[in-house]
Length: 380
Image (cartoon, rainbow, N blue to C red):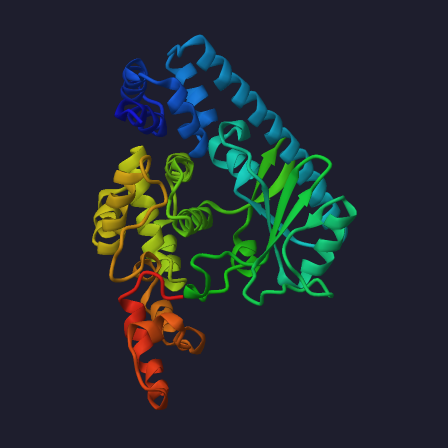
């Protein structure tokens, strides 16, 4: 795709100002292939943002492009309204059953930091609950016409013991809801249990279409956004825009608490990466002292540069490195736990293929495997 198209997507990520509006107009005027641009914007979940930023800047795309953007914006607005209505209804039902629920991302994030849910792609409904309430919440969703797509046992417990979420689809209207009882980062490589006990005491509320709904506090929101983006290798521009918008909407963040909590929970590396991307890709303002501190995290700075350079031509890609992306970003406790846990140390066919030993020396594979993991991006 033409680099001018990339420039427009980069330009709309910046927060509105005279300088950035001018940049949007110049980039839009240089676009040579709008039909190639729109699918990329859709993949990066920024079509609503593209529509609103062009309108704010008084920039006119070709008529057929304007119509496609308007149609995409209206579809997303309808989806946002449907999600908000379903969320409010679910929260009321769960409240009647004394089930505490924390919605996150989606329309709640749109209302909280964008001030307008329609400025962000609606996506699915993400609900965090206590692990003890999963069976009851599952029954409620089934009563409302949802089907559980996640493999479970006869008692509705996860078939996979490492599972941290249930995925539900409702066939009659296409509504998708995910129940989670913990936030996930890199699977087994991240061993912390961050769930309702982590977020509920600091909760706030936000008004969503006239209803007051629970909302993550800004500091925890920043950490969860950085977790989510890093988990998916920051393969979408929208996730970087979310962090940038949060930093703009909440300038009085308690950075001391964020710093302490990120270190306590092993999230300092992903926090540094998320903030650096928001600064470099979307122009988010970050205090100089913090910026220098995050840039001193060599892994985060290196990955931020790589992701920025490949965001549009190879989103989600990772280069071959001696130490995997996830191991570079998690802290030493999780890294050591990953390397030396019994499950991870169990030799597999890859280990047998790398080093040929006689059968009577098979026990040595348990010593060889940690070194093989460090030299292989795909230790599983």
